[in-house]
Amino acid sequence: MAEIKFSTGQGNNMNIDGKKASRMGGVIVGLIVLLIVVFNCFTIVEEGHRGVRLRFGAIVSDNLSPGLNFKIPFIEEIRAVDIRNQVFPWAGDAYTKDTQTVNDLRLKVTYQYDTAMLSHLIRNVGIDNVEARFLFPNVQKIAKDEIGRVDAEMLVQTRSTVQDLIQDELTRVLAPHGILVTEFAIENIAFNPAFEAAIESKVIAAQDVQRMRHRTDERRVEAEQIEITARAQAEKIRTEAEAEAEAIKLIQAQLVESPAYIDYLKIIQWNGTLPQVIGDGVNPFVVLGSENYNAPQSRPAQAQQTQVAQGE
Image 1 (cartoon, one colour):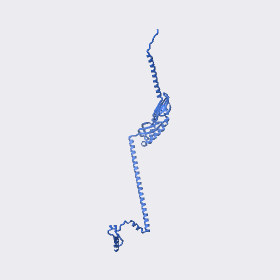
Image 2: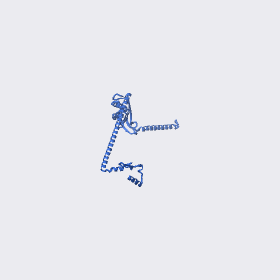
Image 3: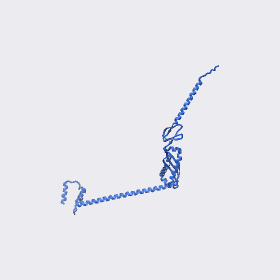
Image 4: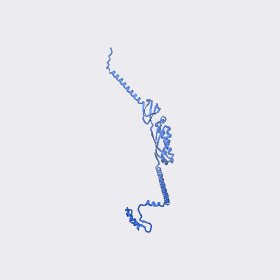
């Protein structure tokens, strides 16, 4: 007897829906994987950094510019190295040439990496090890050596010179390793309080001596100016006297040649007022009422006065 089977069709639909769901899941997983791969194809190098490409850990190039850079996903890696100025501080003690202790010596080194030697630094040192391997030991040694070559007092007075010497030596030592020193500063120097007080007193005394020398120089210059002025005045008086004497000689010579010249001088110097007494005999003529003598008079009055004078 034949067996009859009944089917409602729901099972087939469930199988179809399962297949569709599986396919959708596969598509989603594929998209996720694709996105991961795509995102791993690019690396952003920020401004102020230089990109170094490594393939299976080996350096391929070290000159990738800031911006979006392509890489082979899961095979290559791009590492960004900060090429801007870095600051390395150092603090410690040191001794001067005269065995004075420099307490709380604080130094600051500003440096940057030589971009042409990034591969050398990464291969042989490691960027993270630069300060520990090069900066710390060299800064400590060179600073102590240079400070130990000068007396404590000179260290205070020539601080900038010692600072320049340390920077020059650091530059010479670190440049071959790809580390460029751009600035160096001695931020703090401290000695024993008693020694600092002695230095301060000596500096003040030296300043007083310098001030006194300056005042002496000022007084000397003032005295020289007074002497110069006196000489100039004496020269002026001598010149004027010589000129006056020469003028007198000329006048005397003129009087010898022309005796009437003195009458001419009297005329041009007369102020228009007659003398109170006229004549040099025993009977001089005395003018009365001389205050009105200069008043204008008519011609008959003048003639009458003349006749009276003649009658006498």
